Amino acid sequence: MDYQPIVGLEIHVELNTKSKMFCSCGNNPNAVIPNSEICPICMGHPGVLPVINEEAVKKTIKTGLALNCQIPKCSKFDRKNYFYPDLPKGYQISQLYQPLCKKGFLEIDSKKIRIREVHLEEDVGRLKHEKDYSLVDFNRAGIPLMELVTEPDLNSAKEARKFAEELQLILRYLDVSDADMEKGQLRVEANISLGEKGKLGTKVEIKNLNSFRAVEKSIDYEIERQTRILKAGKKVIQETRGWLDEATASSRRVAGARVVDELRSSSRVAGARVDDVRGATVSQREKEYAHDYRYFPEPDLPPLHFEKEEIEKIRAEIPELPQQKRERFKREYELDGKSIEVFVQNKELGEYFEKVVSEFEPRLSKEKLSKVIKLATNYLITDLQGLLKGASVSDKNFLITPENFAEFINLIAEEKISSKIAKIVLEEMFKTGADPSHIIQEKGLSLITDEKKVEKVIQKVVAENQKAVSDFKKGKGTALQFLIGQVMAKTKGKAHPEIVKNLLTKILKELK
Ligand SMILES: [Zn+2]
Image (cartoon, rainbow, N blue to C red; front, side, top):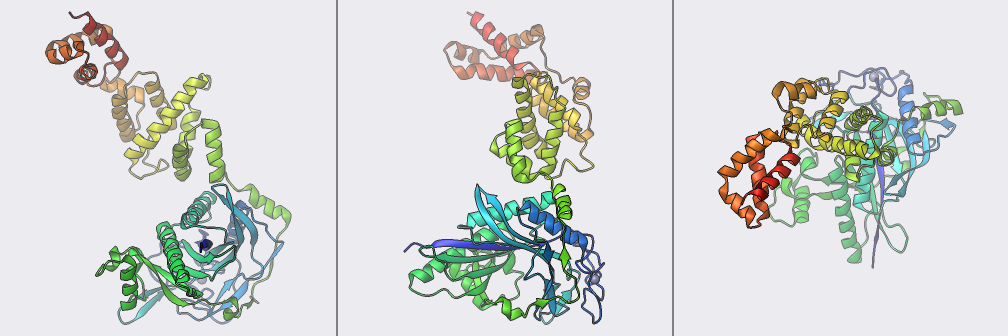
């Protein structure tokens, strides 16, 4: 029997608003002092009244629009009631019945993944577990939290990972969240079932996936686990499971003998340490249902109504999105897929690239323009990124202006400097921000194009390398390359390579 994996995702995103969802406390992910960003409202004291954060609502709608969602005319908040130490109010304000955004989709490799809804709620506090006691920090409690729910349209772990990665990129382009998974600003939960003959199977939910790797590994693990159960003629239990990998194993609160056993058996290595096993999902609790939470409409908040003009105003603020950018870069610059992806993922570098291109002479022939664009792409992606070592071109200490970078590329294209010299010039530009022509002049780096000067060096090299010369006469092709290398070394890379090659060949042929 063949089982079809069916995966749906629930993704929580902390919005980067100035203040919290229902009070004026700061939304400061870098606050270091616990419980410094709290007030009676986010602490749920009796008699306080929450006020809806307009910026959070707009950012959620913006996200919904970018994901092709419908924005209903009316939206409401509800109370989700449960007790947990990280939830000071004893309930969480969320949206069950009338979310802000509905029925959208995101295309992943030309496949439409439907989005059921995007709604807005508030985050909970953080618990810190010590040996004999636990601590709670409420700085995070009340931070605007956007939840996105997909339909079960994904069919593999890879697809689910791609969806989450593309969503992160979109959130960053929209500037609605930093979406840093390590910081818990983007948290993924996956629902996995194995379908048979087009039917859905029993759904298992995996919680707390805090890296893209964990998303992919845990889904793969779960597909394998459920397949094993079904093949043995048993039933999959509907439950919530947690993912343990090397990152979460050490910080997880339910660590214990049983967990370690599961991890060990999953790695099939007896005596494996928790941090070098490949990870496993472990049972946490049986799945809860909406009715377990006694949802009811939030009485302290008015319903939200939207006019068409308001929605259109938000839509107009949506910038070019990653997929549009991919298509435009292909159309306008004819770059290869890999380079395009670098410029799409590294937005600042992509923007810098476009500024450099705009500095090229517009009257260049199509062929020449295509040449300088390719050169600029290569030098930005390999050499400049190498010098940046992970820093951004939008940093203040980055000194190379797009104008100077374009000039640098022109010098290479016009063969005024060799690729070897180019590296030296670029390093100097990176250090000082100086004009490339200026650097070349100052350091005497321009190519030697004077044939007489080159010939002198060649005569010397020929005299000193008689063996290579006789190898050349015997027809050994590598000998020529060797001799060219010697000439280049003697001129410190400054001899014009074409001239060297032509002159050397001529001189060698004339030798008897
Ligand atoms: Zn507050």
